Image 1: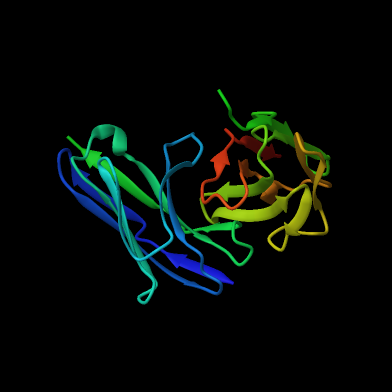
Image 2: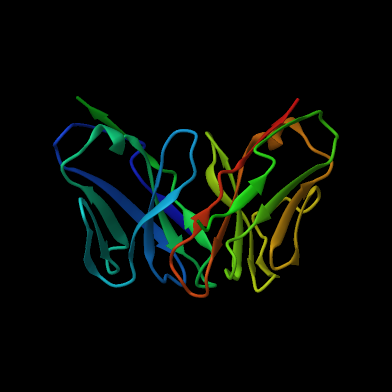
Length: 110
Length: 113
């Protein structure tokens, strides 16, 4: 099976940088994805790491270390609209049945 | 504008009633997922289909839940009989091949009273 751990809450101010960590235990690991979900909305895809290293997409970056079973999402130049829940998700043994972490609620303060 | 469509958006039903939730995946997508989201359990994977065949439904309570794909444009999740503990938001998502991105519908908010 798979299990993932994330901090439950993170708070930061506008313009700051925040890092959301994710550790996982899984068999048949294929990659780590990150999703954003605003209150009342649907999860939306942010980033994916299939290989070790850093992937950058605008203000968001994601990092993966397979040897440490660890990844993180880095959000730069925080904006109020970034207040949301962020989920890491592991691609499972069938290659695409994503298992989600418990989520990290990010609050961006003015 | 390609999107996953779920119906109904909201459903309130009495305990013991049958509930059917429907999902239209994005045209051309061949993988479909059903998730349940609650405050306590987060996003739980209930079922996963690839090319309409169920590949993994280990997260689904078998005694009352069933998931099917009658055709490539329709996925259904049925609960019979429903119980108050089934109250949650049920999301359907679809994907293409080995893509790492899943596209979520807006969800069905189910309340069982």
